[in-house]
Image (cartoon, rainbow, N blue to C red; front, side, top):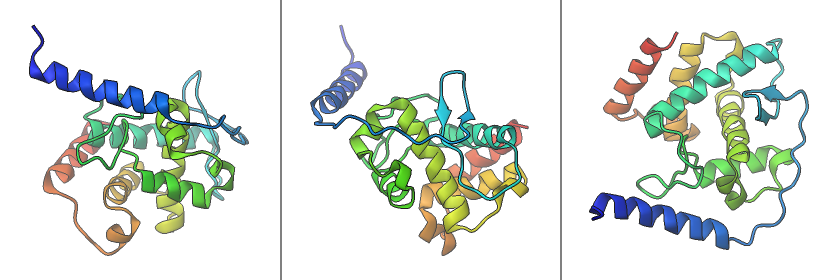
Length: 192
């Protein structure tokens, strides 16, 4: 027979699918792609809006490193569906993107403002676009970093804390939980 754990996961996925299917989602707006970053053979993300001499390859390599680390911390490296709701019901998907983060990206990126939260959470590629845009927003806009000129391990260390705490708490010096710090250190030391 089915154990309780399987039923709980099945029930949670069934609810998420029902909610995603029942959303009244308007047709997605086209993303304005300029000098796209090729992160995989099938996924193109909008160019980071930074005034930097960094090459597209450098930007792509850095985002892969940062994304892998955030995924490691938020979902133990599992590639969850974008609509997967984390414990606490405030974050979604493999990078624990929050509705507040999505709204923040929409506010600061006019080219992404036409998308609804529901659209982002049911479309894997759109989810990735918003995650990249949010990372750039945290690092460049809120923390005022020219992060392409920094060591990637230092960038990750800053981003993972700001991602977890939000820019205001991070700038005010709030600590993250000890287990997250230990996991972040483990990621930094395991990936070159």
